[in-house]
Length: 166
Image 1 (cartoon, rainbow, N blue to C red):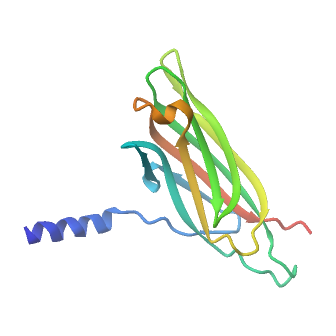
Image 2 (cartoon, rainbow, N blue to C red):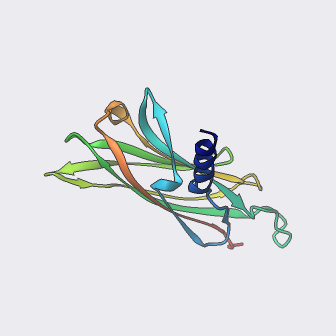
Image 3 (cartoon, rainbow, N blue to C red):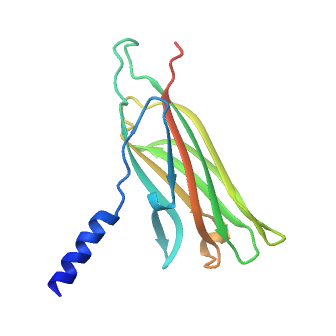
């Protein structure tokens, strides 16, 4: 039994994926369902969260201040429904600073599911406080309580860069 517990702990340690820090500078980072953690309410999954460390939101001696950051986040969620539309939203927060919000609907049109698409583009001066970015994708409204409405796949692309306009 002890060997089985040790083997299981060893496998779980290497099976878990840690999200690498993103760096402010314009590189695109992509995330899929495996990078997110399920959010439960009343025993059902109602959404998914990802927490991403952010590096290099620092004071800039050249401009004599903290730079303005530009956040460009786009995503897509595919889901299964019982024939009704699935209401969804995406929100982005960086260390308590609200970055943005968008909402869309997964539509079941003649048996074909059309995914929800999200886009958040915002410019924020975070004064060096942006150390941890939180992405959340939720089922909302009546979809949140409908167990037949499930999120089957997520794809999110994220770019954070400096506004170099003076």
